[in-house]
Length: 274
Image (cartoon, rainbow, N blue to C red; front, top):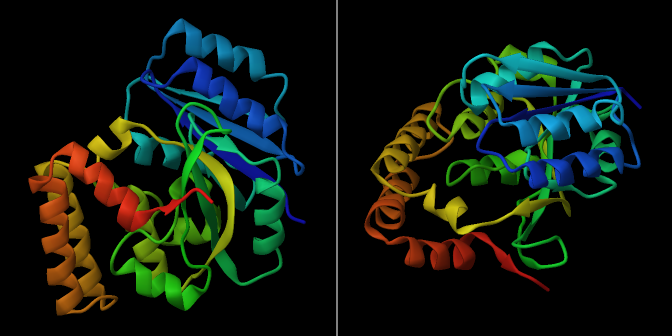
């Protein structure tokens, strides 16, 4: 199998406890990375820095890249990608936990194939990974992924593994408020690259009230509405899907309070724990 680079971004708002859990899940993988690029997005506190120092000797090919100012996740990820030596790259967040077989199962799927992007389902939890509250599952088939893309993001960003050369071909992560990943996947789908989602949850996603709250408000709605216009312009969607998607987003993201929005997200976008 091909060699693997892993990219993680950390900023001052991250938790040192969560970061430690995330890094432990890296060294617990059944398939080990050949290099790990951690991009420090601006100044961080001493607690976060101490965790990074503790793990430098535990993770293969550890590269600690420091950005003097906070640039945001999209720009920070691009810096991470530019420092990768390998074509296959796994992205992970600083507060999520990988299943021990995540890297192994994804690299088996993407190696020696025509796939450019491989994601997986998420197991969402609150306090710890033994308290799973729901699953976020997306279709596996490429054509179904294209169909879903006209309604919502078809890849769970914390679970993604991709070919860096293909991502570079469409310009990498570009600025788009809270939707840099969705924007990237749309450009790659439009360019004809192949996608696949593993139905098994390979990432434990830390769900909080703040997670849902960040997906509301006028600014977030406008970002999503512009994405829907892009989907229509690309020919992925049609006038019906455009109008319907924008109308639903206006109700959920602008009119609905956080309490109602949380219920709607759980009912529509998640599967309850089995």
